[in-house]
Image (cartoon, rainbow, N blue to C red; front, side):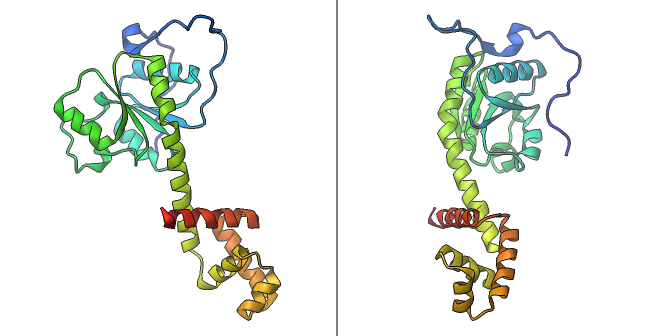
Length: 241
């Protein structure tokens, strides 16, 4: 898959109007040299204009965000299944004109990830697009860095909820790959039983239980009983959700 990140060519001068970002002076008493706290979720910036993309990525990184830029929606869609859940900053200009709502690859490219939508002007059709995208915030350009950073921080709890949900789904899918006997062994581990107790309860030899347990560890990608139990609880959360 081609890397959607911009190529690192010769340095270019970015005009202020290309940055699409308004800078405000630091508040009175603020230390201009102090580093902002790092955020615990990635930001995926979808911006078709290279100069604006570079400037926005640079300023957001300076504000404490981990940023991965994309030149267009389709580049992002091609990559996002392999990405960690995060927040999307999407320039409305990145969307193709008159995209049909049935085109999920364009209308809903984020799988429920919170999206901050940037726009120069917005029509009724654009408003409908924003609704389909489930936009968490709408910001008119040029946008002040502190406003964009604040919108991203507000999205943080939603990103964390997405992570919990995805972890639960993946745990459920992993447990679904177990055989019936491996699931019996898993149930015994959840109940706190030893290998000998599980073997006695299932009328198996301890060596056979050890074999099933080794397969269980391998299929779940878990190196300890604690990791197995954590997966089981996540899967239970997916069922209850």
